[in-house]
Amino acid sequence: MTDSLLVDRTDAVVTLTLNRPEAMNSFTVDLKEALRDTLASLESDRSCRAIVLTGAGGAFCGGQDLKEHATLLASGSTDLNTVPLHYNPIAQRLANMPKPVIAAVRGMAAGAGASLAMLADFRIGGPRTSFLMAFANVGLAGDSGISWSLPRIVGHAKAVELLLLAKPVKSAEADRIGMLTELLEDDEQVLPRAQELAAQLAAGPTVAYGAIKRELSIATAGTLSDALAAEAQAQSICGATADHSAAVDAFVNKRKPDFQGR
View 1 (cartoon, helix red, strand yellow):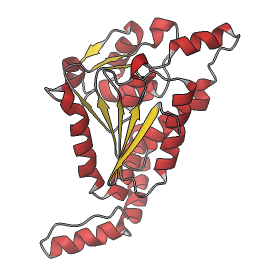
View 2 (cartoon, helix red, strand yellow; view 1 turned 90 degrees about the vertical axis):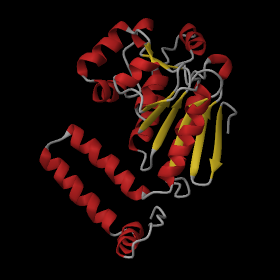
View 3 (cartoon, one colour; view 1 turned 120 degrees about the horizontal axis):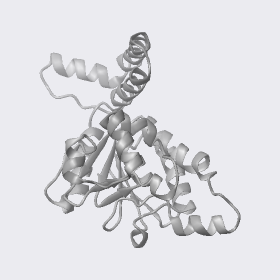
View 4 (spheres, helix red, strand yellow; view 1 turned 90 degrees about the horizontal axis):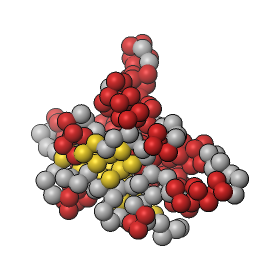
């Protein structure tokens, strides 16, 4: 495992830290491969019931490492195969992760860093948090799922504005338009708060959480009939879980359920 991605486990919560603070945690091939492969592993890891994604130092993630990119361009490579090889799988894993994902966004999240933050289920920020859809500034279109996630969060017209004008969105504005789930007064509390929320979710009915995420994804892109079919399938799965049985029994006996995520 590379030291550019730190993996910390506390009970059922896994914190993934992009660890290139000297370069705003920007993505090299090494870091992209580590994040892609770690997310793939966590998807089927039943001991992991919630994930926190954050960055070391003063930034969340500066997007693609343009120094490495420039070297690859100079060698004759366009390096655009990194989208299907790295960014697309990372985006798919984050969006479809069958357990909650919380982004602890301290400082700037730019380019692909902003894209991946938008795919988290929750985004916690502080006064220094900002987002920059930087793609057009370097003559590129959006990637890492931003064309899918951003309009769903801020609306189509605002997404056009943010992607074409590529101007920073500071914390107060990000909170106002829904890019942040929660805005704290202290940057130092962003990661602890994200981990606290992750622990709360990890103690919940995580099979049901995953089913709810799938329902919402299908309903957003589909018809009412698609949504109803997805809900029926999800309830069939969730209704057979030990968590559902435990919750019903706890309700009948007037006590708090102990969810096991199964």
